[in-house]
Image (cartoon, rainbow, N blue to C red; front, side):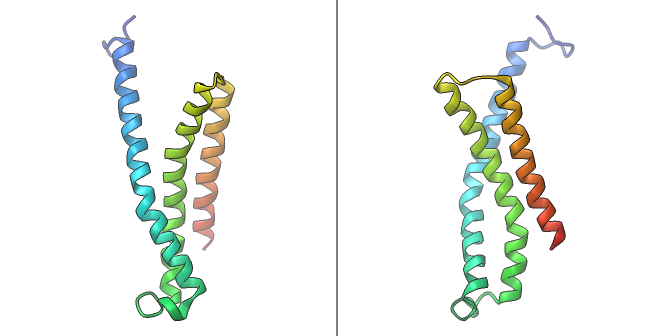
Length: 119
């Protein structure tokens, strides 16, 4: 069966899956530096004397605030598809589960951006 684009449906699915997996891997690799900055800025907030030489408390707050929603986005983009595949391996597959994971992931990202906007 051909799509309106003229491409066979299987080809379109393979293309979409390949690029979705690339996005997941990019999110996974971005988690390491994001979490590193998250921890360093968090410790700089709590322990200003130790980290004050290279990161002041006000700058640590700003950095932490900026990195927080990006970290949540990377976590959701990497973790939730992994959870979906893990459940599918155990025979737990349902469209409602996919919708639930998408809603929870979207809610987490939205809440992180809300907190960012509130300062």
